[in-house]
Image 1 (cartoon, helix red, strand yellow):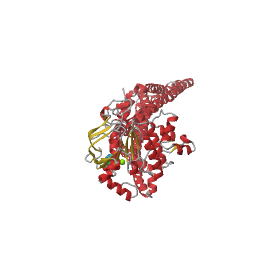
Image 2 (image 1 turned 90 degrees about the vertical axis):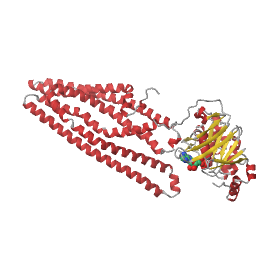
Image 3 (image 1 turned 30 degrees about the horizontal axis):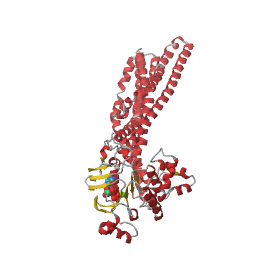
Image 4 (image 1 turned 180 degrees about the vertical axis):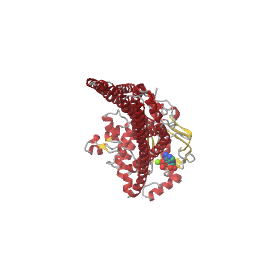
Length: 584
Ligand SMILES: Nc1ncnc2c1ncn2[C@@H]1O[C@H](COP(=O)(O)OP(=O)(O)O)[C@@H](O)[C@H]1O
Ligand SMILES: [Mg+2]
């Protein structure tokens, strides 16, 4: 991306990088300041001019000028604020879109370590904080600063001596800066961390509401959430305390400065160095001059919050943990020939624990292969590696004889359809959910996919058929129904490779039968990798691979493995005595 403002290290650099787009708003801010600048000078003129000559008419003329200035100021302010708000909201839409775009490229080695709530907080709250600050800077600080400069020049021109006195007291605020800013920054960091923790915990428990309630563990969840909530509340108290301290300090400082202007001005007037009109102009203009200082201080809190937010957004955007696939190769359609070539793998979060060890395996196009083995033996990991969600620690995977690194892996994933144990449905209609795999699919294609996955019948029985909305996670559907929608989704792509990761494990027998029937039909002419708990699913597989601790310990078809009398045969006898389940 060329001239990307988000490449900038700090918030101010970011703002600077967007200057072209903000130009209109900034020019209007300048006009707005110029329009208000003559105010104090007009006051001086009213008092010093017409008063001397008892010129009532002059008072009216000057007042009219003043009102004219204010009207112009008003128009420029509203217009400019609107321009800036429009540009800012556009910039934030871009920023959020960058965050989401980025999430698509970050590797799971990074994402595994992040709480969903924390990422959500970056997307929703941090961008809001940045927007809040930048809008305030552009709509309040900047115009006030310009105004302050204009008024400062006017007053210095009216009487430089009084201006000098005023300048001598300004350093009071510098002290404040050093003393208070560090503290404000610290409490803000604490507040942000506490907020992220709170949203993280809350989003976890809210999405697990069903689990919590069915275990009757509401107390535990409540306590945990209350703890996070309380520590967040504590940081808010600290924040309020520090701002109160600071606010009072600022107020007292302001009053002292007014006193200095009045007293200093009076002394100068006594010595004939200042007219009453000029003193009045100073009293009217003093507020304008000091306003940006005041505002700087008022903005310190949003500034640190936004700086924190920006840092947290940048941390995501600059994260080095992107998926490491740079291949470009695409073909019309892959054949579905898969080779694991001496693959070893440890998850980045546990680099010493190898979950796949020197695994060698070739899968022919159209072969139906099954992975079995106790849970934790690395079955899903093999599927994740094939999808390129993680890269092997050593060894490599070839697809149609070409290493993953040469393929465009994003395109490869569109050739591999996955059905998992717990299929997620997105909010939208049943039809939308099926179409997710292929947005351009026609109604007829969607219908056919539903027929093939044995889903058509129950879908048509629902009130609105394919238009029936399903909840955020499809809670209103049974596991078997959700799974059939997921299969329809997978099949809509007509993928050369189908991966079924315990696709039927969570289902009752009737659903399993319906789904198995659908799967058998759909397996024709593609490479199918079935990861299964239940034996019924894999009876017809061309080859069964038995895994333990990331190693292949046996392989062969159902009959030959049974005859071998090894681990697989043991699993089967355990299953038959244990009610149709493979031991895990
Ligand atoms: N995202 C992850 N980060 C770290 N370790 C993981 C992750 N996913 C799985 N593991 C570990 O890898 C091992 C194999 O897991 P998995 O492939 O899911 O087993 P299976 O699918 O055979 O039940 C297990 O010990 C599991 O704890
Ligand atoms: Mg698994």
